[in-house]
Length: 263
Image 1 (spheres, rainbow, N blue to C red):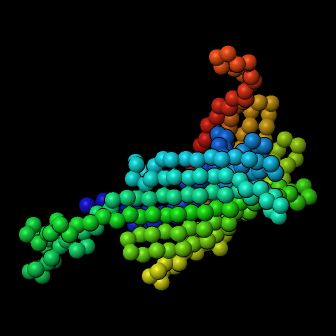
Image 2: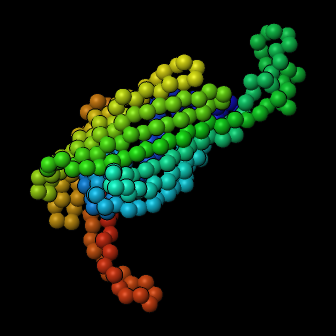
Image 3: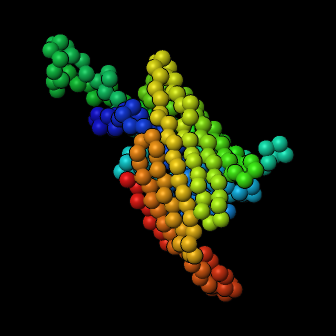
């Protein structure tokens, strides 16, 4: 009975968990964290500086995490306005459903603190959900020879009878020298969560340095989380293949094969 409830609280309080950890972007390639990755065919929420000015996508995900305990839904799309030009939006929801609530199911009639079978009222066992709703707004822009990007992230969480609200920023920078790129990502800046209980907790900020380079058909990234000491390495090899489907004409497709190592 207590398993899902225990998992729910551990995820929220003991781990540096954020709903935005599930952000999968617009099909980022097999490279690593990509602090310096720049591809004209993706928009990368993990590093908002990885961008182009003309992305036009709708992308959705339905899945689960932690052996199916945490349900996960995501929807990403772009908005074009005269004032902001291109603004990228992500809507996220995670939930742990049907958590047993045994708060009112035990009547300690003899006041000995031990749960006995005749003290349990199974009709008083209900359920509740642990739900997160996330909104991420992302804007990319250029400044001289730099590629810059900014995420602003909002999160509303409901856990039993309590709720919380949090807000934070991500900021990314990319500088390119021929086929070598250098980038920085500042994640979860000014992050603080406010609970209806009056409690406040923070998600630790991250400062990630990355480098990415192309050699012929091989693309390689190395990213270092300077604050937490994490290392991420990835490489992908791409080639072009002529593909034909049924009666349609052949088309040339770019195919990527790659791997990631996260230490």
